[in-house]
Image (tube, helix red, strand yellow):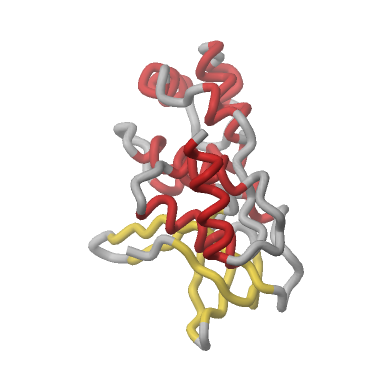
Length: 191
């Protein structure tokens, strides 16, 4: 499974990107919330990814935040919601807006998203109730560089979930090294 890509942003055409990683170009579909926050072409970018293998295709979906990816994965668990629909939902609503709509049981906000009808909106509200907690409604930590991405992956490997890892890197200085960052993050998580 491909969990993260770090490379040069070679092309971008909504909703797809081409990320050059060591001479290999990966096509990645992203929600518009991620697309609008991308660096300019030729700059380095780190994306958290979700890899989907189907009978006829292998697809990569990318996200700038762990919160977006977690929400995407939660949406995929719902019957009748595929990757394209989940991407459409995250393009039409921020994670915070989606969590707010679910907690308030507002189907009207969901039907405004292209491809979401009344029945699908009601199913989303029913199945997501209690699964998009208040901590998912908070903006996730944007991974600013490769070191922070490595720190998050190390924390996840140590058994922390994505939200805990993302919260632990928020206060870290942008120029922190991987080993120092892991130590600082573990101290923060230990409090």
